[in-house]
Length: 266
Image (cartoon, rainbow, N blue to C red; front, side, top):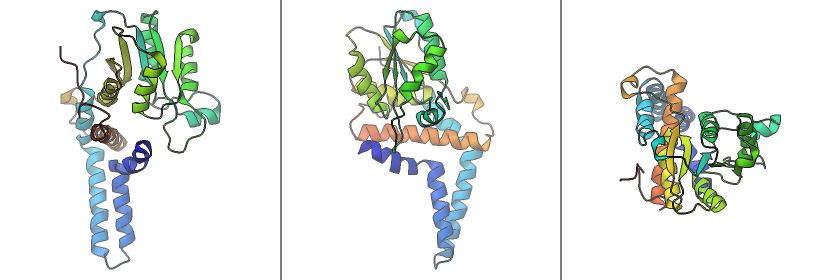
């Protein structure tokens, strides 16, 4: 049920979808006795879309997520394993074209291959199935192996978890697959903005990991107050709000122990 709600109500609460919905509802009210309300709804939706498209709102929201965890420090030594979260490959389009189609967050795969070369004894785990509400048998994990192999990761080193649909299942299914032992050190590779939610869920699942953030979407703080291209502003706002909604929802459901998970205190 949680998964279904996240893919229905959760998606409709994203700013762009919500504001488009408000504008369309306003348009539908124009020929009725609620003409004034409809006009106000349309104007409000248009203005708010313009604000998030061209203002630094999206930059600031995503910056707070991306800065939660610092870059991983290699001085602590080689890890025992590396977990790469899915989200880069579109399984349905990959199936349609019979080849891996990387649509976003390619850094997750590129950095994973780089880490695999640097730490040849580390176990490599890719976790990702199909996150669509209505899905066929196409799984992201089926294609991730091809991409990682093409980047130089030996097939014999790859462990693929192909059933997870969201980050909660990434954590639970990965733990069940690799059975991490006490004292082992595992890196978690995912987008910097996605790291707080991911860390919270892995900790709750009893799988200690060390965050390895990648795929940053914004730069330093003094670079955030610039005029966006419209699609950049809309996209960053939606990404950030989706993460914040996820953090709140998982905390309210008791699936994480903190609203905004951060670095562990020494």
